Length: 419
Ligand SMILES: *Cc1c(COP(=O)(O)O)cnc(C)c1O
Image (tube, rainbow, N blue to C red; front, side, top):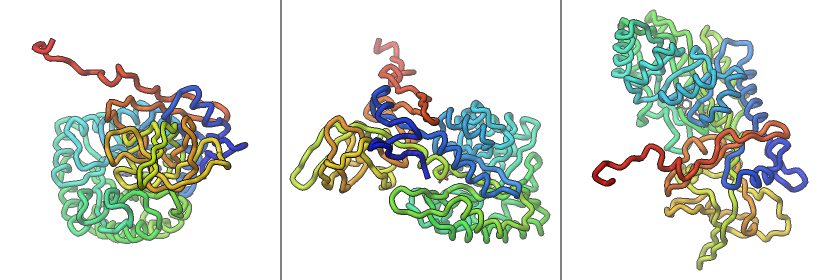
């Protein structure tokens, strides 16, 4: 379900041929579909229609200002994990009353910023953090709304680096200890306990881990009520997967249909924090073929995008479909590695991939790159970050310029003794 389709043999984003954009801005670049983005947000919003709910887009998946503006206009809140993300969300016009703040390492200045802006709640991940928030709120003569992030010890059956709800993960508070921490929170003078939070992992392609986790969490909410701790928000986190290859993840309405009965009599507002499921398939990375290279046992397709532009293949062994932007029915196919220009053996976009051997200068589209693509990109090898383009209908707009060489050295200074 996305708006990247071939029309007359050319890959288009909505009604704009990707090649047209490439001719204007050069390669590599990211391009997003506004229509896909909005329709994915609405799918979540509709899925929980009829019950009090709040969809908080996970800003870390793609913090682009234009995208946040678009989602904010659709009614989205924000799930943030840093002061920088809070700044971005507010700047995009997202109502602070729709902002929730997670992360194991919130600094004092970040906590103060969030308190000053009066965000909806902190999702607290440890006892010491709880105390730090209480102290900061006290010093500022205000009160902090908090939820505790519970680790329900559920295997989300995803890559170990993006699994977060297991005992050995650094996130959340073990469900067995959680009552103790809730009681501690209740006793703090500047904290209002309002919710419970969980986020068990990312790229989850089955409903069952969500169901298992929520059965545990809702049972625990009953325990909390018995202890006179009144939970008003149940935050079920993000993590719904997308199709990169042949996965068949549940649709938002299927996920909602499975979890709504579990949440039916809780009397709570349901909060969700989707990132990847909203923006992942709403964006692609476009790159040009620089060279072909044939080693004894391997073919390489060397392209102008590298792991600094899209690190997911290197970091998570993630699969991204790679397609020619202009269909090449006559091109012969071969098995090749698609690699970037970075001086690392781990710099690849695809390994042992059967694909058409497109010519030098031809464009390739790396599909499903909208989430954790640009947001994880870096300047490694002193490569300027690539531009981001937003398409709506037949129009495209550069929402983020390509960095220049001068941007690379911005803020760098020499000590006087080197002058
Ligand atoms: C990363 C993250 C999300 C979003 O995860 P997706 O897999 O992109 O949906 C939601 N909540 C929290 C707390 C996160 O850290």
